[in-house]
Length: 270
Image 1 (tube, rainbow, N blue to C red):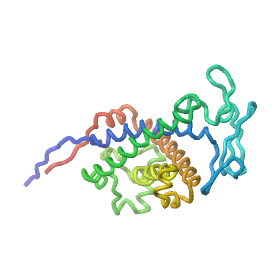
Image 2 (cartoon, rainbow, N blue to C red; image 1 turned 90 degrees about the vertical axis):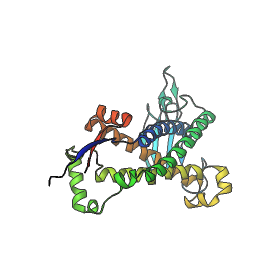
Image 3 (cartoon, one colour; image 1 turned 180 degrees about the vertical axis):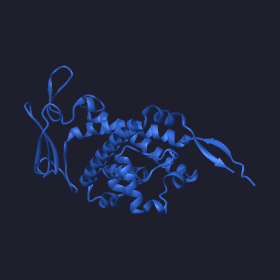
């Protein structure tokens, strides 16, 4: 007897995923730019509990009226004209670490930068928590992100790497299914990197340091938490760049519209 099947259209991206995607994108953009404003107040990074001008910084931005540079360890990179020493829209030389076009606000104001950063940090944290809970309840994590046993095979991972190098991100018959590299990256970002940003941010707070000193101790001190927070931000920026490259190669209009309207995939129902 022939088995009858019907095709039922389903959304490629469910509503909670789409809402969180755009809220998260906005929050990260504002927090990166306002975080750079905060960094301008003291453009040096340390390991440990304390950090001041006379202490050794593992990374720093230096500036003067004639030069700008970024130093990482003992390696110094000349960034005159871009970082540390740059010209504003009026043509005047500025010696803040990060230029105004990359910060919120575009002028130096530590107080305003902190207000922008902390407000969106709370929005970001609440949205991330709700997304995690809803994704477990609606089985988005189990269905789309969970790595199956066969996908752990080195041959499977290597095949997916080779497909990416050929700019082939999905099999033609399964464009709605996340490949193994996507799963690895989404798990790393959603369940490791983003929570790490939240907790290192809390560890830098004097109030949290007073009430939860163990949180600061986990990261080896407030300055270590600040360094990890900055490295996490840099990792998010790299993820965004690779995400945009993949989007452009996979078809930006279709993929972006799918994240706005949901897109469609087919599910076979017996």
